[in-house]
Image (cartoon, helix red, strand yellow):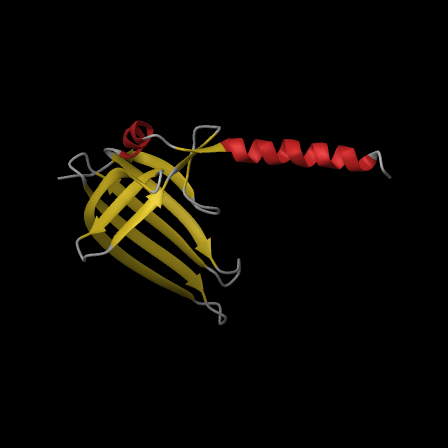
Length: 143
């Protein structure tokens, strides 16, 4: 059993090293290139698979620093019905650094303010948090 323990330690160190190097904080230029003048779709789920809420959020990142966010959510009820919600949000966005992390700072017209650090995976995809997918949908529709 003793020869097996070094093998496990080696395996965990290799796997652990791979994960820690697989994502890095994206540079400001990478973030500007990816988001500026593009339409992005974010999808994620909150809660359980059957009765959780699914979110579909389209964000238009305009080159003048404005954004338009169009959100949809779908939640299945215990009775088998679907509860759907839609919302919109508008404001400004900028790539900035907070506490040593590069990300996007949103300032909504309603006064809300949020910063989301952005990470870049080894395959070039961008990452916000576990379970959130980010897909580029084409050019932003801006005025």
